[in-house]
Image: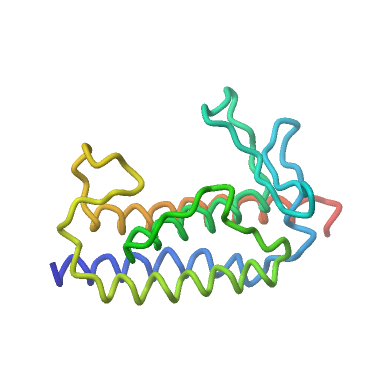
Length: 173
């Protein structure tokens, strides 16, 4: 499994680097730009940030704001980290979104550091993963780590595309 771990670590480095490129350019005014009439975002409810969510994905799928995408990364990555470290997985509603660009960058850097340490330390890559799939799927902790890398790259690309389109808008020239 040492070879698999090295591949996962290199893959994470690439995914993280691509996301980090966009995070370095992230500004508070990027977070809530509504990309379409039908969109998901973050909303303040009783002093807490709450993510738009549906148990069954709507059709058409709402276009996410950068705010929602950053919450989404923090949510699934922190839950995957909890599972990898064999801690209780937090409920979606309990994952706190920080609400501003600088704090989001700091939040992600902390999860990235913790995830990197946890992957390097784990000897469970061959074990069946409990998250994000049902145990019956038979997928391993190595599959989970690969999924984190792919999901991170996908969400990073979505954030990047949103920022590129926003900056290309004539109003920001």
